[in-house]
Image (tube, rainbow, N blue to C red; front, side, top):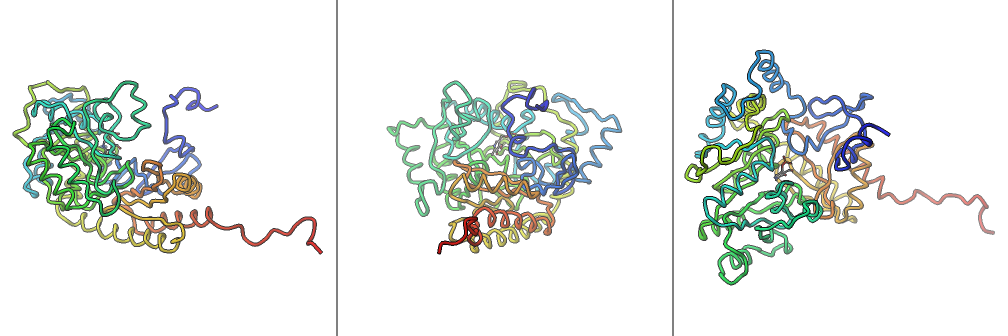
Length: 430
Ligand code: PLP
């Protein structure tokens, strides 16, 4: 029995899905201890948008380490943090005419969600939050309460109160607009839904099945929020940092959220870093009122600032992502067309794409088969029925098409009819 089985908690999960010993990674690939390469279309669950051990980011991290730069800075002022804030202002906020203050919330995505929910409740003096069917926001008390997945919710062991779930775009079926329903529930004093402090929203639901909200729906939801004095929080933890093409997933949707949450690929090198961007008038925190030891991951500030300067100082990287997305969409649509009898559908935005197989059984088989052939992909959705494609945004076109080709080969293998009749050992009937 390995040390992992003997000593690591049963809660471990990815190590069960990809049961080999990994020890190296570079670019689009992760390698096991025997040197076998796997194309990585999971990319640290979206935290490696610039690939494994990105050389530009790693170089800066190594320089910072060898210069004895401060590693642990609590939330003190440091050169690393100043550079990060200045770069964020210069590369992200000012060019987009976005005016936000930056709250360092603690190292991981769920910390940003918790901070946002607390602040929204404090500012609006209301307890309720609206979240969405199939939404995923993390596994701590507040964020889990806003997460729809029953399996994760069951792990809490207490009720998960103060969140009302509304139907996401498309939840009631194609062509069914859920906005009138949401509007009625939020505006009618007798609906039984307390007026929320905020609406917490993913523009594309990453864990919930790569569900894409349409522009008109998003804009309609924002209008409802404005009209009813409800804050709009965009959780861009998975689909921000360039995943959908632009740095923020809501940029081309014409939204101006009150709070924006970023984590996962913000540091770029896979180091923990999370922020909540707050409209300045919402920054009602008292000094230290929300805290946490690890709010100043200086090494992550260094790599995050480097990533912003290197990839986001102009629109070139964004164009590159969109061009690759078109290639990926074409390849995946090809799979759907060639296997039309299976009724597979594709959906997504930019370089987050999903193939919906309708059943978790087939997608689970496919994920396992892909892994055996050297491709790491994850499934998601309420029944794990969707294979999610989350390649690094820096993925090469060769690796992109090779990865998709593996999926198609495995699909053919799994769904193939037995070839020809096997001759009976007893001979043919007379
Ligand atoms: N929000 C979204 C949209 C996510 O996809 C995730 C994680 O997958 C989280 C929040 C939670 O982030 P973390 O796992 O870093 O706590």
